[in-house]
Image (tube, rainbow, N blue to C red; front, side, top):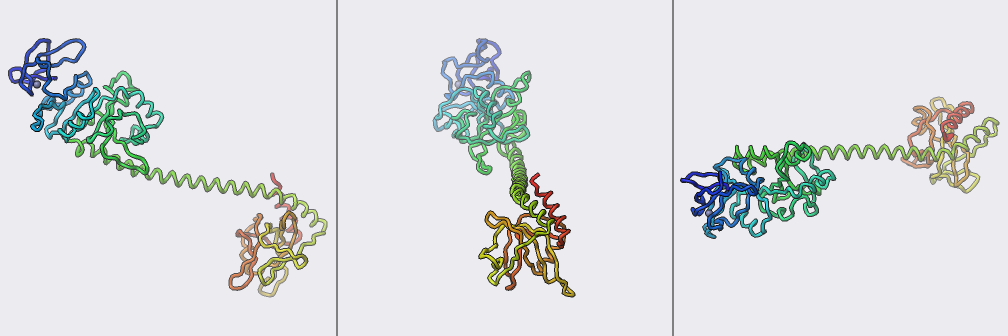
Length: 422
Ligand SMILES: [Zn+2]
């Protein structure tokens, strides 16, 4: 006990051997001021009237002394069990703060919670300090950063808090030791209380364990407001809510960035694959260039039959779906207002054979194709028929140029340069 009554006045144990009266049971008490234990009063009968009493340590006393003297060792009488209890600290609005250093039996813990109801525990978790500190480093205790006041973790799996306290029916504030300003690194974490709630909060699939509150803030708010949730933790909850919203926004941004990165990567891979593929074509185009230079070009003439099949009128081959590359376009017939006939020179890969062919493309398709600059690529040739007309289509939007032999030579040089596999 920190206090006894001497002549009806609350007094601390100033020297050994003083006599006073227990404020609870009114029996004689004697002061003990040795060198080992903290100065205290003890019942002369050696029997403490509060069966929940705990031998006080420096930790206890330091904490209690943070609060108004009137609030320390407040006496309660339990008329059901006919016994006295001394609450470590009890504010004017009956918020009880119990400081617990030593081990406590579960029955006693539950009994105290039931009796005081409006209470919080401050638990001396200094034995867990090293584990705790390492966990923060290794992120077992996730989401803790100094500028954030909440943390989450799988409470079943972590061992950074004394386990027996995690099922309390009231908030438990873990204290990892009295702070010591000379040891800044260790002191940082000890300046905070780590509050675990009986209720659970969820963030995505995680359970929010609780909130960190600066010890000084905690003491100041208790002193000022006398309550716990309304004025002490509510601002923390509000901050937590804001943090959660921000965190969610951060996550969304992160997902978006990730999606962008993935799309870029996909495109990069696609280009890479095309480049690889184009190497096969490059050799063939080189050969084709020589053939054209020697005026020995004899392309296959392709046409589209009424079923939409692309054939060459010589073999039973069907070219739909073959990879092809458009090399150039030749407009051959001027019909006064229009070029109804357009020949596209293409390379086709039929099975493993490379073929050069001309295919006639209707004007309304070519008009679209002609707008723009050179763009050579490997495409799939096919035919589709909207409005019951057959249309030659490439699988990409393509831009070609009117083809002449000279232009074709140039184009092939261009292709050759770009597809030489460099
Ligand atoms: Zn007593």
